[in-house]
Length: 318
Image (tube, rainbow, N blue to C red; front, top):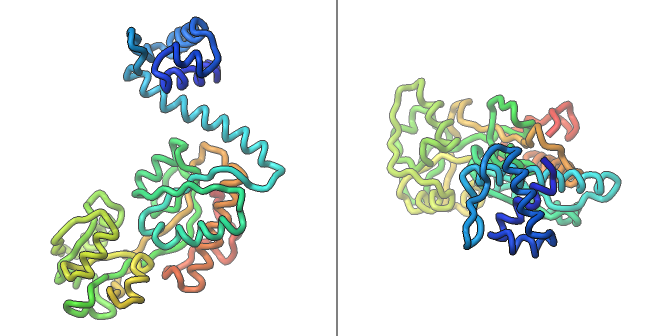
């Protein structure tokens, strides 16, 4: 299998016909047909449905397309890494963040990147930790800041901080104590994400030994919608304090500490173990870690730093 066959395959799929692809790729149509026939013979499956109207992918072709794009992307990353090895970090870096991490960290990281890595262009993606992991492994992301404390052989992870979860209420209704027992959560109407969400998993696992049942009045995935509902007095919620710092400072929401060591999440910087890190990506990782550590130190991000005393302090490579 040759790289040019992968390029031809992707080019034909994007063009929709051999004729259009021939023009775009500057390759004779019979030669394209021969290359695709050889590729299909090598993979042992038909990749295209052919008709008078053009070509469409078979189910096997759809599967092969994802792998072809990853291989071609990796080849381009290799070229870029070689060019950047002795130069100022430059190029595109895709970074994934969970919604609550993104709310606190996106702007500071973007600002620092613009000031100190002007030739690096960030692509920022927000999603659940599960999706971020899949996209790291598939090559769609270069790095991710996500919540994860479980072993994962597919990822290289650098622990950053422990983010404590707080009980969040509006200021219109009953006042919660500044420190509350975990069992007291059962006495409050709660708005929480669905059971598949990582935050909900932590909450459910923490209360399981107590045998209590929470009064969940609504399940919502949108962080902004949850905060607005709590402000309106519809219910209370459980979130990292950094995710509501602005609303607490403006006295639109109030936060109480939950007396349980289990109500916290570890934030890690993660990359795929199978994909080399470019100079630009490595520079963004170092910068992001430095920015986040500074925020924890100054209190801008309420949490406990677990990444060591210094940026280079005996941490697993990310």
